Length: 263
Ligand code: F6R
Figure 1 (cartoon, rainbow, N blue to C red):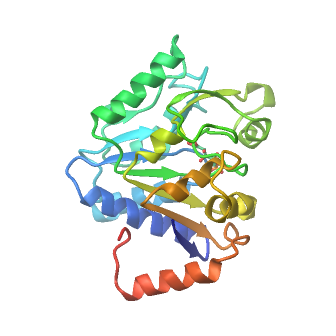
Figure 2: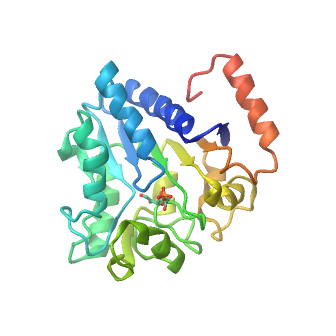
């Protein structure tokens, strides 16, 4: 895993945008896997700015989202469907018909998940999967204990995730306790993975992901087995990495060589 440590969240957004821009430029029909939550907000803002100011185009791209809450329809303000439309789709030239999420209101949730995985395969697989990380080490909604080979499926959220998500809802009782989530096995099939993390609250999870054992205890640690993963983190999120000097050195060398965002 490449680890890029940057001074602050703005720099994380800029460097992550460089990675996405490179993926968009590499194919007429790029397939992006995107995330929700607060981590990607700066990145989506930066991508929208590049679209406005420099014509960065998403035309021809397909997007597959990581997850959706069970019980929330696409028009619910806190649905992930609504989130991505609000924060990215409406700001750029993405075709809304090419933005795919599992349906949190489906009557047969397992069938919905299987058909979501099939639609990723039909699109040719994901070129670049963007991820945030939960403070408990989850990616998408693969909570600790998830099978490292799991597929997209209905999952229950842990009390700590429900607590973390409560900030977006007016009362705790409204926070969904179930979601449809891409599995760890599904995520691992993406050709590239770009994980972003900012803030001290993520420091333990980032350290476990990068330097801990590969274990369902920290689901993100499965990314150690992925051949093309870049973790772009700020100083606070990197604070508990033991090998941070080496990651900084590697990054300096990479920049000296003039390597592109994805080398
Ligand atoms: C979002 C997702 C989650 C978040 C994670 C971090 O689609 O699947 O795994 O990436 O919970 O959330 P934030 O970015 O809000 O700290």
